[in-house]
Amino acid sequence: MENKLLVLNMKMYMDIDDVNNYIKKVNNLSSNVILCPELIYIPYFINKYDNIAIQSIYPIDNGAYTGCVSAYHAKKIGVSYAVVGHSECRKYFNLTEEDVNKKVLSTLNNNLKVILCIGETLEEKNALKTKEKLKYQLDNDLKGVNSNDIIIAYEPIFSIGTGNVPTNSEIYDTIEYVKKVLREKGLNLKVIYGGSVSSKNIKELSTISNVDGFMVGKSSSIPEEVLEMEKLLRS
Image (cartoon, rainbow, N blue to C red; front, side, top):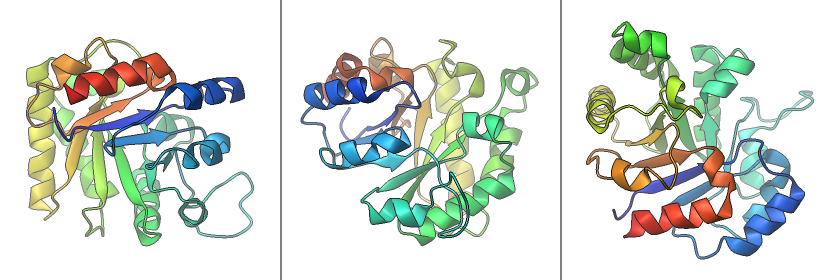
């Protein structure tokens, strides 16, 4: 399972006590692990871990944008990656594909790497529109992009936090299609899977040959889960 990426999206599950406990317990992570802590806790993680991602950015470098954080400022404090277009951000902040594209371009322009999230709803899957939806997102989110500093996170929306994980063959076929679309754009990108990934299924999911890694949600905030998942990926 060598070289599989492990992106740990901690969302908003941890308070300062959890963070301090996490930092004490989670040690010796491989270079393939990317941690995405809550914004206010990033300085705690930067002091200990190599690969830190910010969970979202605002696509303007400086200005009167109260409550926003830019890729420019994230880069200045040592962040290496930015998560862009997560389904929760698309839903709660009404992001359009144009918004996501601006975030992608801003992130790349500030020499951060992008973790771009794409995925379909259950209704779209049942209507056999998965490929149509993913191509639409890729075409629009990557407009004007000519960089391989991007990781694509395929996260079927119906799988996030539900335990409703597609079969291995379904994941294989979808990721194969995503990589085909990317090749047609002249891009050679890693594609990872996210959606109810935990220590209980990561070993089985890692047998899918074209999956380059995983994006983990709630389990990424539990030290014991993180250590077990990384161990399973190394074995």
